[in-house]
Length: 345
Ligand code: AMP
Ligand code: TRP
Image 1 (spheres, protein in one colour):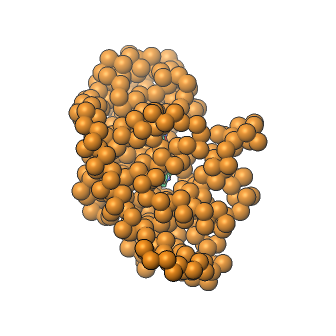
Image 2: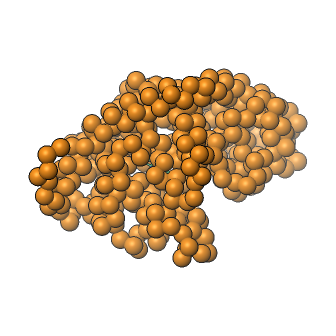
């Protein structure tokens, strides 16, 4: 972590994931695994399940409830400890929605219009997208700034949203003449900040890709994982002797990166080991490694999912602890913006 975030703010990490579908390998390597590393580095960490963001596009209520509990189980099975990190779902802390409203009045339409995720998700028919989808980045800024978070670990695709969070913080500070919100830093590090689809090396691996073969889900069993890697699209060349040789081979590059991230080594080291070998040798090695790393995680998720009441208890406890940090910050925001707060609470 850099120390560029203003020193008056104590380091605090915040990140979130939407409870939609199962987590895929890109989420795990690009986000959750990094969350665990940050927790273990001793800094204060808050990890959210952003259910209010999820409903910016239609969610079946029963599916949303399941996905929220499953994401909590994925967090814990991956190594997030509910005692050391604060784990909760967004809708249980109303301050997120309240601060998002204030930020809706700070952020400009033009800023939202420039977001590539908005353009991708709204598609050609932006008129039919929900107002919530347009305001999505404003709620994300609220998630982060409600805790004065200084660092946000995310994958590459979220960089623009964290930059917008800084713009909102800066405009708020400027408009109200305060130095209240920090300039939050995105933390986008490691070899797996953009894991690509197994079917197309130019598209990112995604939970919402219609092709299940394009991704490894954390819930996939060993056979499915092995089969998906075996069928992954590649070229016919053996692996080169240097990284340079992977330059115009996006699919091969992606598999090497995945191997490196899972093995916690560098792509150079992977190339060093497999140079000159074909995919007939590399893919089974990759599948074995992935199964060894992911199977225990899937088993632990299943165990946790068998006791939803315990998951709900953990999320409730996390929400209480999150609210205790958020409420005084929100109260200050209401003060700064001139809201009269005389009601006894
Ligand atoms: P999402 O699935 O959009 O809710 O993303 C949750 C987190 O996972 C965010 O930090 C994303 O940047 C990260 N993420 C999603 N897909 C990938 C991917 N293919 N490679 C790396 N990180 C990803
Ligand atoms: N927009 C993020 C994604 O789709 C999820 C998210 C919501 C988030 N609020 C956040 C990430 C705050 C980091 C910090 O992946």
